[in-house]
Length: 282
Image (cartoon, rainbow, N blue to C red; front, side):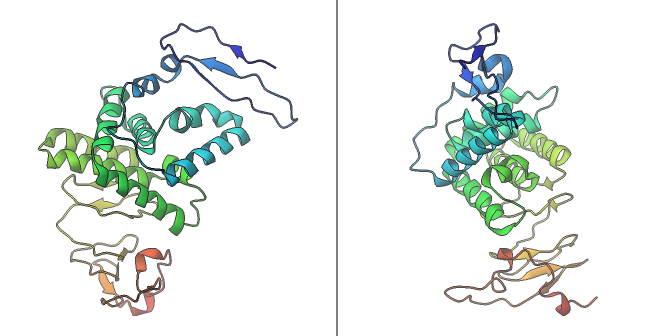
C-alpha cells in the first residue's frame, strides 16, 4: 500500500516519512509523510547546521542508529520518537544535542535556542566528542540494565546529565558564567543531578541511577576509582580505590595495575558495591 500524505502546511521543502510498520496481526499500517518543522520544530532547525569536518567511521553512532531503527519497527508507537531524536539526524552529536535541548527546555528557554548552543559546542570540541562516546560505552559495558546504546542515550539521566554538564563546563571556561549557571540549574531540576560548572570530569564516567548526585567542592577522584551510593566524599579519592560511607573512607589499595587489570584493581569497571564492604569500619 502506498503511504498517504497528511495535508499539513509546508514549512520545510524536505519532508520526512515514517516507515511502514506492522501490527500484531501482521497487517501493514498506514504511514504518513510529515513536514519536519510542523511536527518537530527543532528538527528542521538542525539541518541549517553542519559539522566543521566529517568524522571517520563512527561505530557507536552506526550501532545506535541500527538499534533505533530496529526498535521503531518493533514498537510502532515509538516510531516518530525514534525518528525525531535519532534517525533524522546525521551524527551522534546532533542527535544528542536535539534530545538534550528538548529535555532541558522551559517556557522561557526554548529548545531551538538550546539546540543551537549544544550542537555548536559538540561540533567545535573534539574532546567532548570523544568523551561522550566513552561515556555511552561505559554505560553499555558496565551496567547490565543498559541493553543498548540507544537505551542509554535516550533514557539514562546519569549519561544525559554528564553530557549536559560538559557543555556547561565549556561555557564556564569561556567566561559565560550566567549561561553556565542557568544550565546547571536546569540539569538539577530535570535530572536531579547537581554538578558545579567549574567541575572537570574525565571520560568513561558512569553515574549509576544518578538521582541526588552532587559534585561541588575541589575533590579529585582518581582514574578507575569508584564512589559508593550515598557517600559523602570530603577527601581526594586515589586511583583504583573505592570511596564509601558518610564521611567516605577509602577502601582497596592504590598502586600500579597489571597489564590486564582485574575489576578489583579498577573498581570503576565493576558494578559490585559490596566487594570491599568487609573492610569498612564505622
